[in-house]
Length: 370
Image 1 (cartoon, rainbow, N blue to C red):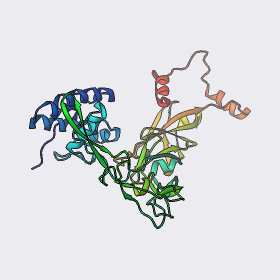
Image 2: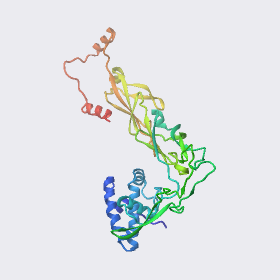
Image 3: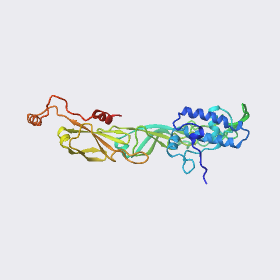
């Protein structure tokens, strides 16, 4: 039976709208309180220290926090926020207090850097999604040494400082007493091996500058504020290390007739005085092609005509918003003699203002508000 986890915000004693700085302060306080070196092997304190570290590791990461706020704990277990261990809590503690605890040194080939780039997409691609081929300027594996960093015909040798373990152990005195720490080896930088004869092409890095092609599926409903994470498509690590991630942002080209407002689309619908008075069926061009709009007789300027389901899909649920047509009555600035005669027959020139529906200007402002 799965163990029911406490709410991470409750664990840290903060509100759900707390700032990153408030999160950090709460974590520092609780990490000091429950640190095992201050509680003489108390298993309860050790578990609370681990729980505090786990909560902070999720809520301090914007993407993980967003997912947690949306989904919480699934079936009493943690959703896919990444692996967390007891040593991870010490990693977080050391990050703030610089102490030695039982932190594990990260050894072996280093992970490559994350990359970030933006691509320009059309309005329609943002609405419906698309597949794009993106060329990413990044390092590629050196073909001369096959990514090893060593000159062809040679190989890396075991590091004499750490005997190939990639880490060194030190003992230091702290406010909690004598504490042993394990850190990456300063000679081999945690790799456990040293290259005596570097590759002349990549200078021992195992990679050279180049370009990489990535096939990207753009989700329907993306906007300028959406960032897509492509795992393992970032910079390859030196000497065969794992690649980082690629974070892809979007710049959406404006549409000539439509303006996006969340999941809804706004369309300014110009109509003539006659169409406003008598009503009409008008074909307009949307992202879905031509659609008829029913203009009722007596339609006032600024009226909103809503067309359900013709807006932008939600990037997660796929549910589409609406297309909202905002009516603008176009008054002719020049009339022929015949048109003028017809308007004069209609009358209406009384020397006083015409009646205007209360709230008209308010509704017009709301329609185009941002």
